[in-house]
Image (cartoon, rainbow, N blue to C red; front, top):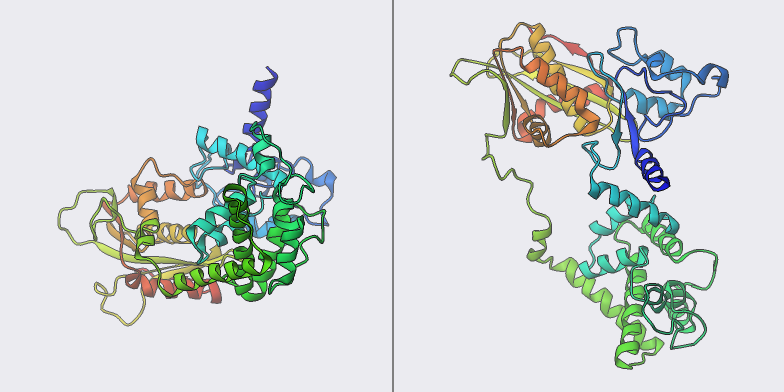
Length: 455
């Protein structure tokens, strides 16, 4: 029973709240804002806040956030995050969702990933997702990327690791007999490694800061070099090449009985850098296999669309072009839409724009689509086609299997309004086709442009 209780607690740790009507979520206790609990501002007392539900911060109608109440109750950054979250248009219940998958649904695979991530916290890796993105995008040899990923997860076959996994062998370093051969000893503390680092162009004293784990020490220098020189920092590449060659030299000594001097080491490091230089000058076409083009293999060009209501019968339709604009740091977004100029022979733009806050760039595009449908319905249009440049939005509306927990309320409202038209189709088009709508959205996000003049 204790095992079942522990498993239940682990599942709950991986869950966040999705805000519906806000009546089930305690604002100062539950995780409901980007996986965390928001911080109240200094003027709010605990006596006031202890029983507040999220419902307290909704408008009386329940269809939007109470801007004044949120800004006065929470720290600025958390207030921005709250205001950027979507809300349902109808009275929907709050519910828990699985935060380790975009769909919000628990699976064995994502639960296992959560447990592995929890184990890696011993090495301080929970906050290193930004570094991994940088690592995979760096212009280095693919085998280097795998090697450094293994280094950060303590996953290479040092003697200490082999011994911990039950292999019967002496874990003492056979080069110096001064300690167990683990990551720290192999790459930092043994005399040969110290000499290589000190005599290299970086002049690193690898034995300093002994209290730092190898992972912390590695990330300290990587971040330092990249912050000063850029993502593909020459010093960063030299640092990585040194680690790679130290590992190769160790394997040559263990498996082939070959010894290498410090001076020969530096020649090998230079050879590794030369390989990187060749890679930069002549990118291999075979690497394109790892980055396939972003095309829809099922639907040919021009057919990436979703018909929400009606049957295509050749009758004329009103075409509205929409797009969004978003700033990640501030969450500020703009939504723009306009009536296709081919059908309205006028110099005046017939459409609209609206500023706001959204949680992502996709959220701004989805909201722009929703606003254009609402305005079209209010204008009395019966047959509407919406042009967007987001294939992801079309996929989310078209497939029941593709779900984004952060957008479920907005997508559901698009589906609901779309079904009120005699004909409603959302069509993915080229980015250039929505350029005018994007200009309106950009003006809304930067200049707070707000208008609507659909006939």
